[in-house]
Image (cartoon, rainbow, N blue to C red; front, side):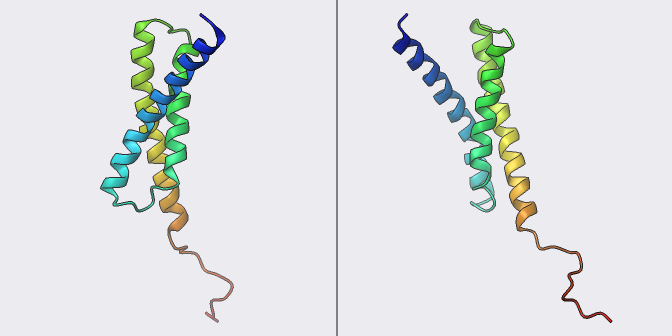
Length: 105
């Protein structure tokens, strides 16, 4: 197999893994009606790619490894989406602590 063919093969794997990371993000975007999901998109795609690439790196390089990488990429997308949405909600929440501008005394 030539270098170009191997490169295309690897790029198609990454395209599949990122698509599987995009699915949970799109479901979350519909459920949350677009609120707090923009930050979660790059996290979901990166987590799905990382989860997908870890399977062959850990040694599963046959058909079972391919199917396992699909499942782990989707699970990584779910985790990345959840983490991104939680982070966005936390960053946009108003602070409840006292500020120096409060005139309580």
